[in-house]
Length: 442
Image (cartoon, rainbow, N blue to C red; front, top):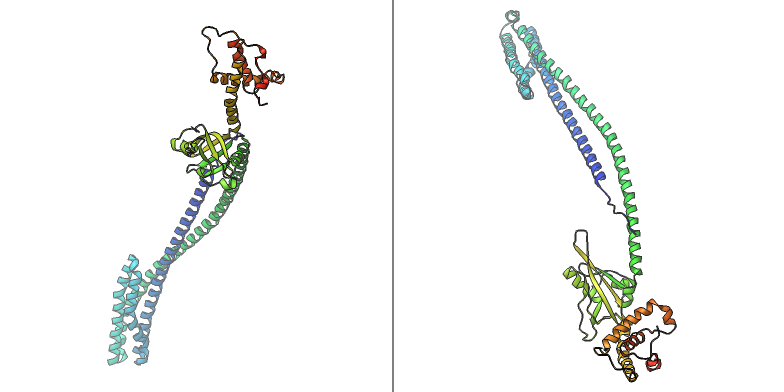
């Protein structure tokens, strides 16, 4: 199964998340800026209102002092001096409060400093007339009042207070407008920013949803491919074991499970040396595991001859195998794979061959007395030569099954040896006695 490689890209989702983050940050910044502007406007407006209130209170105290002074001058009764006494006691503290409030407003601060001596002069004028009235009748005091000194001072106080009040009033209006503008801007940012963020969030959710669907499809494709490869590996006629780089088994096919005696559930996660135990057939010395050597040398490694696999239940199976490292696309070894097969039938054939060859050669030599002598330079057939020709005859038999059915060939020795004897010794066809040696039927 050949599936094209496809990577699941997170770039669009990451980009949209970044844009959403920028939008949220921008909305937060603009909202904070609008909130700060509103707060500043409110604070400045409060200062202006305090200046207004202080100015009004100062003017009211001076008026109260003048009213009490007039009543006392006319009647001479001390009870009329109560407003005067309260005003003269409160004016100094009010000026201190006025100056502290107007300290952040240099222009108003200068106006307050200019107003203070006029108010103090007015209070001295009131105190002078009150003191004079206590010792003299009203007429001498009336002449002082008619000089209009007190009236001029009071008019100057009213004018200066009016300027301070008007400036403060204008600033209150300005800062109020700024606060309202900040509120309106904040409402616009909140409304349209929320709508934009809501729409963008919907698009982002759709993108993420589509990515999740695509990822699910890729997962299903990967699962299908994994199942396909698992079935393919399980269908291989040889035993197959796959491991990680630390030699822990991650896969074992049914043939390997049957040969080793370990089930798949038992073998997964085990060390390969625990499941795949091999020894030399003759010496019984543990043989080097080709898979471990393949990981160590980073090369394909074959198994030594005459190796026996000892199964979990104690069975001994002659095998041959090879180990090969598993590399990723960067060439890094991530594990290894071991392929091995049962060669019991081949070992039986080899042992049968060693048993038949001497017997058959003796039969041939015993029946070749009537044959002509060897030609000069001819070589006597050896046991290895007879075996080689026997294997050739086996291949010839597989290529021509019709002849084998007529009994003209056998599985191992007869045809090859007969050809050798016929070519070198010129034996007759009846030299071969089929009953002299048992032949294993194919």
